[in-house]
Image 1 (cartoon, rainbow, N blue to C red):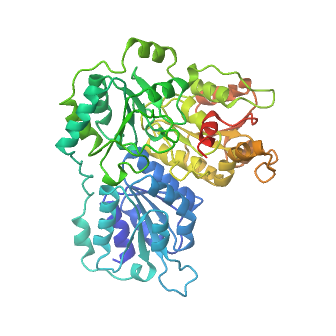
Image 2 (cartoon, rainbow, N blue to C red; image 1 turned 90 degrees about the horizontal axis):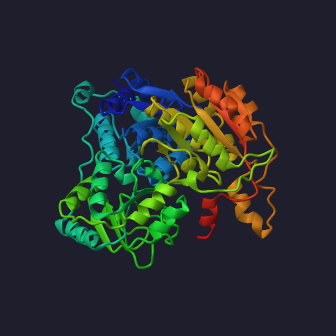
Image 3 (cartoon, helix red, strand yellow; image 1 turned 90 degrees about the vertical axis):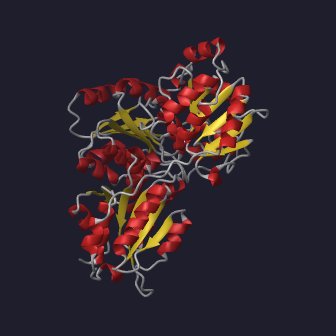
Length: 547
């Protein structure tokens, strides 16, 4: 067989069962080889959408996925999605055809492009090594949690392989990443800090989404009297736990922020403790002791100083500390219990509805949709002024219920995020929450939604502007004509793609959404919600304080 076929078959043999992409001449044969070997291929309308769908699929399913792109321009089209995946340490294979001849109009330095956005680059250098090099790329993606660009040169693709069948027969999925065991002295140090703490708070992040982590952390928190919170990417991890504060950071409720600020010990579990999770450092009290647990030594203290860094797998560290921990009441006292029971989430925080006859308050919109839409849902959220409302007002069933592709803070990824997550969890209703700017950047993927027959609800928080910029620069008197736009009928656009649609200006306009949920949902639904636009979202006001 030729090298292109060997590479495609090797990817599937190594456990890559889902691939997204746009097929051109350079990746045609390798992609067909993957589908012939049993992989599912989803044709997208843009490589950027393909990369983000693959990223979201991998995050939600826990399995390595692939995106297949044409040489040169196919890769450059996908770079934003690849950058998001790389920054989020998503195990992902980017199968990229490559024109290595400098005179080719498709030639670019693809290795440099990969490195520029934080991805790892591997090249198939010969037909003889094609199977082994492909297997190495998948192993790197899985065991090192890397986004890997696998460059497949055009001249190598057509070379005949020798012994490929035998090499393929010996392949299998690589073993998962080995759990890193912590050093005993670090375990003892953390156990000692927990024994002395009067108001401990745990903040779990992406690294705590693994099997067994929730149970281990809840058991340890109960033993030492800790309150539980998550970063945004791990939202839902502690759902229904009465001591959960939900999300720490700019999305925190006033009560959660108050309790976290009052902590004398904050432990980040697989959480980077970035400026967003700590409100630029202001969410953690100046006298608090800060501990970070991560299986990557380089992550410890990367975003803020910590008093103790523990290198190890979250579940493993929590279990070992539990074996040494003492029973403590800690932060779990009657006053805290009463406050959490009285104001557990954003839906319990009073607000003055700012809606008019022309525009709906995004809080009212989100709360009403939370009641209407089925509880078993997967929410993909785009970036922008609106993003806090669906992230915090739409409940999710567990840590797999929110796919939060915000590592690069790019708008335009939300729709594709929801598609990838939907394919990973077909048992749940997919919900894409986007702004009008992000939707119009990615509207071609409405076709992909309809073509796949996904019963998706696309909620557009439409303020006819790039709202974050309006609220960032408007108060200083800057002209805003570059970031405000004439009203657009996004419902009409979606109908052209085969969607059912509804335009929402008041809560009464949401009745068709109830009808859609109750019906057969044979077509996806786009909700063009005209939201109020006179003030920034609460989380954006908080973020501005850090600029």
